[in-house]
Amino acid sequence: MMKLVSVSVMAALFALPTFAQDYQDHDGILMNHGDGHLMDMAGGMVMGNNPDTLPGGCEKISETKEITVHAGHKYAEKFPGRMFAFDTQEFQFKPCTKLTVHFINDDNVRHQWMMHGLPKYLYPKGMFHLEVSGPAKISGTLILPPGDKTYLVHCDIAQHMEKGMKAQLKVGKGDGDLPSIPNVTANTIADDYKITLPELLAKAHEEANAEPTVAEKTAAPVAATSSTPATPEDSTFSGVTVIGLALGLLLAPFLVQKFKGMSAAEILAYVIDLLKTINNAIIALTAQLIKKIQHTLHK
Ligand SMILES: [Cu+2]
Image (tube, rainbow, N blue to C red):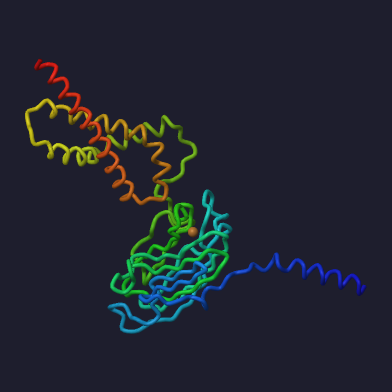
């Protein structure tokens, strides 16, 4: 009997390290670089740390709260198609809350808890930001502004937000919901596994025909820059725009992949930019061609 007990005690002792994840604690070793920017040699970083200055419009700290947020691959397992996530996707606090965030990175890569849209006079670049290479823990404190507003919280390491590490923090009632937050809001562009490529092209074509404003917007500044009217170049603009649009439509299925996780405004800006580039390239080519033709005709 004694032997059995000692064997099980030994087994338990050996098994212990596999249960207890070793987290590096950065809270005691951070150096203060001023302006709420704390950093250490082990790669831990806090930006926008503000435990004592009240934002404009806050008469006093309304509440003092502490939260612990985990980040890691395992929290994304319940979200189909996602790779990284926080363990919480939505936060809500009273205006003027003093909030301490304990951020625990469970992965063996770098993650951030980055909040955007804060008042810039108090938070550099409007950000409050915790960052650490895991597995590790890091903490920071901020005082939330007054008013109802929804703030984006994400990990800004390349592709981590698009792969699921995105949340929203509502102060007061918030002012709406952000898109593509796992299990909270719908994706900006929904995954569709049933549609075929020709169908997708047809759909993109329909949508492009329904919204001629994109073409108009891109064609207008181009036409305005042409200072020599009554040249044969003028008649090429509509043709050039059509070619640009056709190219855009051909590229559409590939772009859908790229647009995953982007907001509608970001996508529109990207498309307009792309069409401008294509248009300008074709106009330059056409102009060269016309000059050559004119030369040969005049000879
Ligand atoms: Cu990350």
